[in-house]
Length: 173
Image (cartoon, rainbow, N blue to C red):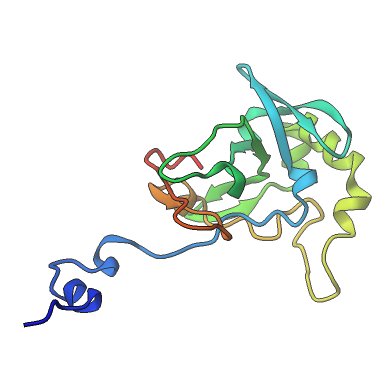
């Protein structure tokens, strides 16, 4: 009797991938990483201070409008390198939906972030093509669902050689 092939072995298992995972999702797409990413970040009670490659300086942004990120280069086989990178994420959850903060909310609640965005408004406004419509000039191209982003997940780069995956057990990235 020959050994069953991999597919046959998988079919004999009690659970399928569909039983365990809720889906396969792409991460956030900013539309301009240089505008939204901060590197070499330091955190305090209220702010994140990080290097911005557009201004070529360290800028200070309200911590509550930022989230930690991993990029493909920081995900290794079974682990990741924490390079202290954050993304400016001008969104919140309301009624189970991910929605952007209005300009008024940005001015009032995140004045440092709003001032930074205003300083690069021309750049942010020119992103995309004629068929790509951003809902507001500082919006991300695809912010994704915050509920999914905050769940436990396996992370992998979109392009990698071999197995490069790590487990986000806290739903942090």
